[in-house]
Image 1: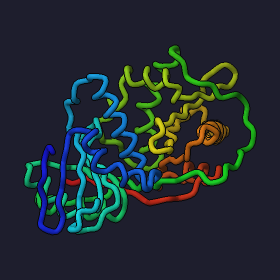
Image 2: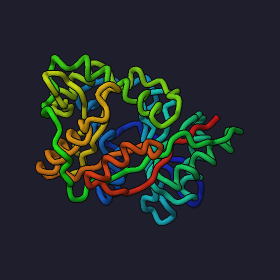
Image 3: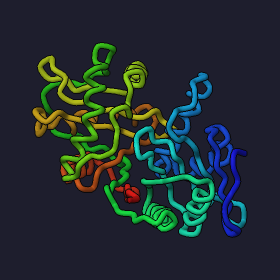
Length: 303
């Protein structure tokens, strides 16, 4: 075990080994695979990288399991984001477990400036971390996790969906990187996280080679991109979904997301996605396609 710290009521187990984390938390993650989709997909991807012999990243990468007094899993969290301020991601847990996790991170000298995850646990964790650091926590972004119910087909639009190939890597890479800035702009925020290298060219090559990036093409021109994650515990997560400004308002996003969602569903996966609650357009589009809310989340900054 890489680390075992915490308070009397709860015990925090922290590890940098994704395989070790899965031994501890796999049953917990698999019990609600839609809710835990981000932790599951990130962990399985990290495990694949370890098995391929890739070196550990330069940014913080670890996972934590919080056990309750009876020894059960009260909650899990991870710090794996490859962009500053390297925020934590936390799944639902009791306030006492969140306080214990904050205390454990304080004991190991971990400076945390951002926390993302499920409500209300994210508030409890960020609030306690801020208190321990003599700072304040404030909400920067509200998000919502949706799962596809019965797919509602959108109105037909011009063009067709096709998988992105090697010749599309550069445009897909540019659109992946533009997605964060444009999403923040649409929500009325300024994007201040350093996400430029969040997706590298090597990563994009792998995504395209695996068939996880799809383009809507109209008149021979790529006008929209929809990606999705490798399924974990039978759940695939759609995103990012990006249409350049000059092509918006024509139904491309609805058509592409519906087609990709149908494809994943036909392959036997449950399908989910995240929306920014401050963006009414995306929320309206996805709900019209049959996506239904699962849980509200928030991204908090500690300043």
